[in-house]
Length: 199
Ligand SMILES: [Zn+2]
Image (cartoon, rainbow, N blue to C red; front, side, top):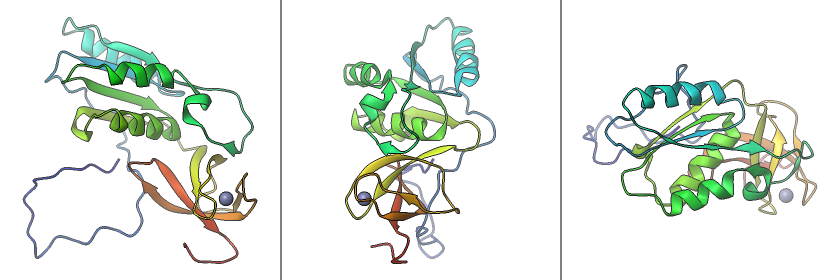
C-alpha cells in the first residue's frame, strides 16, 4: 500500500517523479502490530482469518484485548455495481465503530485485496491516518473494484489486469483495466478498451 509519509527528508535533486501507474505492494509477510497504543482493532476480511488470529494472539500476550470485526463478501454476481456497505457484511459496523473510536486507535486488517482496500478507504474516511493502519493482502487478487472513467460506475469484477477487457455493468463498454489504484478510493481505473486512451 502506498504510504503517505510526509515530512521525510529527501534530496530534491534525486527525488524521482511519482510513477504514472501504481499498484498496491504487499509485503510477503504480515506486518507486526503497532505496540505504541493500547487501543487495537483487528479486522479479518475473507482469506485473512489466520493472519488476524495471529495478530490477536500477539496483542493478547501484552494483556490487551483487541476489538475484532469480521468483514465478509455477501454472495453476489461475479460482476456487478459495487456498493461497499451492501456488498460487505460487517462494513457498516466497522464504520460505526471507527466513527466513535478513541484517538490513538491502531487498525490491523488482513484478507483479500479488494476487501482490504475498501476497509482502508473507510478507515481514512473516518479520520484515521496511514501511520495508524497496518494492512496485509493475502493471495492473488481474484477480484478487483473497477472505476469506469466514462460513466463513473464502480463495480466489482474478476481480476482482468493484463487480460481481456471487462464489461461495465452500467454503460456496457468493454473496459481495459489499468494497473493504477487510487489509494484513497481503492479502485482500479477502467477505460474503453476500443478507444485505447485513458480519458
Ligand atoms: Zn461505465
